[in-house]
Image 1 (cartoon, rainbow over the protein chains, first blue to last red):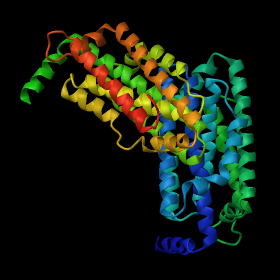
Image 2: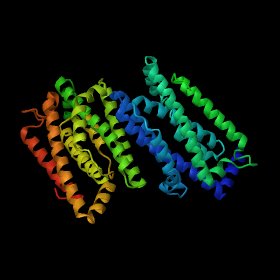
Image 3: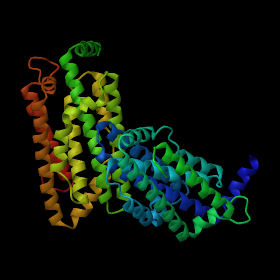
Image 4: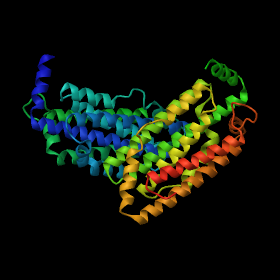
Length: 232
Length: 232
């Protein structure tokens, strides 16, 4: 993999690549920070101390991921808050439009929303240098963290078809908002767009790859809704 | 210190001592869990990303302390949620009565409230076995964690005497509520009372010690208010 390493070093000297990675780390960091705040506040909706602790634990985990990403931005000589600033409005808007009003909506939002974001960042990071990819994958991986969510949603909807259809609708709204907000973010940020689409380069994605990625994101979303026992 | 160790082992076989420690760990664990939720939601009031991150970091730290205390309860064969349950209503009532409506109120609440609680648990833990004392002290110690709070409050009140007198009043209300809620909790829980007051025993506290402790708590509260530039 010596070629890859050399390639990665070469790419860091390219200011466009660097700006794109800073944008990516910035949006991901703010995503973790705002997920922390939302999960912690959703935990107050929990019907039991057990589930409140479980959701609070997820929140604390997201904050740990935020710290990793912020530390990396600082290593790159970038103030994490400056890197996050361009994405605050879009992510806040997403959270305000999709503000859960019940405990089960907050569980589905977390499970579906966090998974779409993870899938997306994982896909994008495949085109990045090793270090950045490892960092992003590390910040996304937390095996088993959502098991209790699946269990609680399955248990609640098993006996309540009305709740099941309401949550199915909620899941579709989430997917729609996630797609439209992420397109808005990408359209606003030249550096992100250039990072993601470098036609003719083996390192970047072309239009074909982008279409394939969105196909895979949708496919995985459908699988997750099935896992929750909900129609997608 | 062999005598102390022997003494500690002897005390664990005493069901009253054990029940008192379980109560103490339970109220402390729920204190950390609810501090986590309150801080995380207060962080949303932050005037800047910097201070939002700083308060979120304190919240995540409290959750880490909760995990330590819950793990210890499990080691003792006690379900953490059962140990916390008797204290949920009193602590929730405290937080609801003292619900900050501004960013500076939330900072003062955290600084003053967390410190009173830390002082109290530290005083009580002096009468406990080594392991429990180390655990409690470890869960309370996080050097430097409140520096930014002092800085922000001093900066804000320096130019705003009205804010300073409002926050001074707020600090007095906090101290009053903390004292009355903790008395209510102690009065409700025989095991806690017995743990704290074991007349004639060298291990427990007598009335004199209790009065001294409350004197020290008040003294330190006054010092902290001064540190914040507020009248106590």
